[in-house]
Image 1 (cartoon, helix red, strand yellow):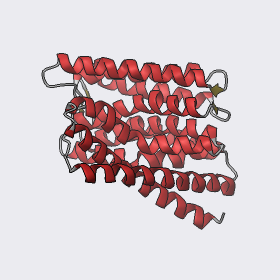
Image 2 (spheres, helix red, strand yellow):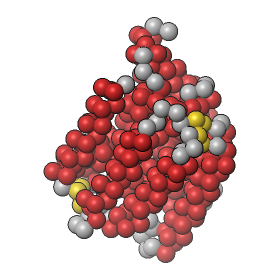
Image 3 (cartoon, rainbow, N blue to C red):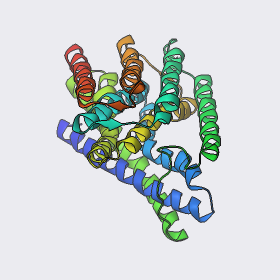
Length: 314
């Protein structure tokens, strides 16, 4: 495959996956609301799935097409991207205020999920059993959040979202079109990324940690920075934190059950960065429930230093 063709595949694939995820989420959430499923439950399940759909389909297609290390690297890279670059950039634009519940409840869950993934990868693979363990953790997490939402008068911070309700036919059409775009475009994206790896002479892991992770996380970056400028940073950061949990427990759990994955090429530094980024964010906002502009620049500096290390050591 020519490098220009590979780049076109990546661009078309990224745009198509993001657009397809939006259509699927709109249709599925609308259909669920028509059956009187609560807004909070829809937010915790369908909307959460929709925001993680780009990463999920890209990782799943990577594993099915034989690039299993890229599938794992995509999730590790996406979580690092989400925390260090997205949260850091949001704070650099405007001081980020974070809900105390996110700091005290959600961030420890993100750290536990990251540590669980690190432990499961010590043997160099994610087996079917490992996938089942992560999916079991997801079920526990969702049940916990639903119960917490019922105890909280205004629901769980950052989880509720306004849902548009369409006609049944239109909702089903959105679901079908969204799924089709996700399947086809994620396949294009992976093919293009793999071709770039071959052309540059680097491993699938390097591409997964950089190009693939960045491409699937761009919507969150744009959304969070705009939200920060509008003073809605707490909701944006809450969604970023929640997506990190779903990335690990849901995406790698489901992918591992469908197609066991090898983690060859993922280094100890990558795991340290994934866990360390969560700790850094947690430490910055633990006492004051905010991240200052200076702390945001520190987070972004750490991210770019890590990216430079990956590129120069590839």
